[in-house]
Image (cartoon, rainbow, N blue to C red):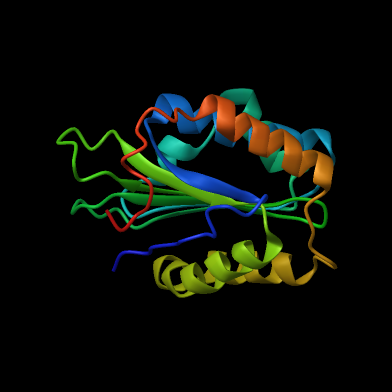
Length: 187
């Protein structure tokens, strides 16, 4: 089963669909983690992949810091080998909600190019969570329940405007916009 997400392209809290490689989207994910840690957001952070989520996870001291300073970090990998590869990083907290998605661009034989998009809108994060939760339960019921329990302890979810502005600006500068003919997952 593939999981497609489409976000309103022209909303201020939308990260518009673009074509990117890991050298572009991984620094953005590291920035999301960094801002969450610096702002003391105590987020619930979930990494999911149809193949292997290992490529999304930070290494070394950053990983240890995430494990120490976040409310919950969970990793779900389906370990499938069939295309398309899809992944999602979901961060939810009382001051920052982010979902970043990638799906391998089948137009490229190397499977290193991804149609990436996302949202900084708490409702979109909730929607992504609701769509993925059954998959997570299938992969690891105990871990999925831990994520659900952690999210249930969050009071009001929101995204502070200054964090939204920083991430939206970073998306626009870090993610290449050089492939305008790939604008949606539907192409």
